[in-house]
Image (tube, rainbow, N blue to C red):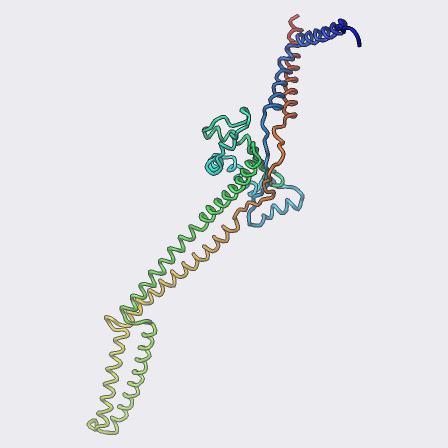
Length: 386
């Protein structure tokens, strides 16, 4: 190539013409560009250049009772339809509400420093938690925007997701939330067990104390009377009196027979007479011990039998209370809840949030339709004003 190359005046005019047409088109549609294109470009620049990656860790679990399902639920399942919300679903909602509550946030803040998790270095200013010491209400609101817990109404499975700016943070928080859910279930079981068992346990304690008191009075009575079994002692003394009475009757008969044969002054008759008198004295003495006034066997046996009756009554109350306590324990165990992990928390590798393309398109579509509706309204107003 030789000589000097001069700019092509015709090409320069064409570029100038295209630029002029472009500026003219933008100016003619300046409202559309200002309300739709410019905000969309700003949102696209933010999500494309500024927005930090977020990592999601998810887990699934169900809440079940140890008791067997009711007959009505079986009929519904056999007919192929669900009878709607049941007790298990309501129990799962209890766990769901707890994991999204102030209590859960406070525990995570204390054990995992939740504020630092949401304020990791390198996180963009718009996405991160703005406050280093946020109020509990602000922290709860931000927490609920990054933690989601939902229950499937058909299967009863609870799906939980956690979004943070670090993979290990999402994995750790998801695992901690599952543990907190299990702890909450255990706390509910403990309260239910105490409510069901405590009343029966108190009844058993009262009956046990009454039985101990009666047994103590019986022991004191035996020590005071120096008699282990007054009932057996009374029977032995009664048997003794019966034997003495029989001997007395026999001796009197023999004395009566001797009185018509030998003299009353004979030694044999005198000996038999003394034997009869001795037997009479013994029978009278033993009879007085059994049923006489004062400290007789009959009075001691009456007091002892009263204690025996009290012990039998209290023993029956104690046995009934023991049965009710065992039934209450069995009922409490039958109503116990269990949190079953269906899917363990995963350690995310790839960031899938925020949904950049989807968000930019949603913003553009929303602004476009809003602009279109506004333009139609404005056109209608202008048409009626002419």
